[in-house]
Length: 190
Image (tube, rainbow, N blue to C red; front, side, top):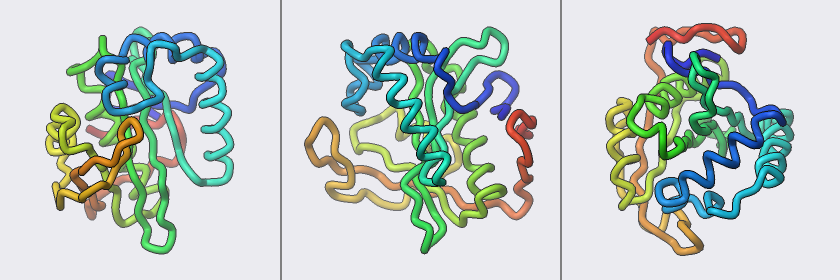
């Protein structure tokens, strides 16, 4: 799936494991601050386990996780996904991370736009939430920049490194003119 003109989102394949693990290890000081799985000891085997989990979750409709790749160089840039589906109420969570060397180049913004279009046009959801730890200033700014509405500060909403933390809940809802993506690899209008 094309995310703007500079990035491509696609499911992980085993050959991505080396670059995925390198990106995680590179990003311990940034991504690792908020996600305990992002640490200096992350291995190719850890990446393969994650890819297998993603494939199983995609098969049963529990989540849709993608790698973010630079469209020109094919370099692995980060990960994103739709998960934590609430089928009864028609909403899900949207998450993202970008390797440290690719921060501030538009990858996460492109992923948010692409995934929200999939959520609304393909999955027919009525709401997408982005939940961000209260102290995660870069992600708070990104969620707001993406057009998500900051709704509230939820107490003890996330666990970060095993400790409960407050988090802001942002929401995206479908636009009346959202376009459908009928196949992976289709360009997404920007």
